[in-house]
Image (cartoon, rainbow, N blue to C red):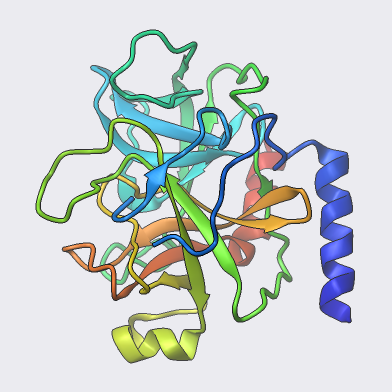
Length: 264
């Protein structure tokens, strides 16, 4: 009952704050097997951003959380002098999309980030100029600090990462895949004590995020809205679809994010 109460409050919060509700509805099938993902509906994940080199090469994903801030993975190593944030992208091969290319004034990595253990894999990017919000560019709601997810929950991850473990090629159009959340104890059967409380485990049932998806969102549907619960972090080097992948647990960093964003 307490969980239902939390969900009711979250639904209210997302409706009030204007985050997590796309103008274009995503087409999500909770039985589909991105590796083994599917093309997203254009505009249905309006918080998805592409991190690119100045010459236009995609290397990581990210999520817009308000007009000025994007959250991504620390291991993406975003460099404000060499990289840009691209909003409203769907087809990386198209020149006809009304994208917004934003420079970043500050990249703030969580002080606990450890590249050796991949723990605390989160960086905030402050855009130099605000995103112009609309049907193709809109923020995602953040998971609250005390979020407890049901054990059998399904979530969706999106990105332009590799779709074939045997090819380095990125996806051209945005991919999505539905993955089950996995308990920490189950996850440790695969990964042992590498798993920490700041990590969220998902997948292992025939689909996986892969290189190039890093930093992108793992979102959970809550009523008619969506919330960001994870950030694509790490997994098997060959994107094994039978092994769960790891996501930075956003709820663990909610207070840190709020503090940084409040400082402007």
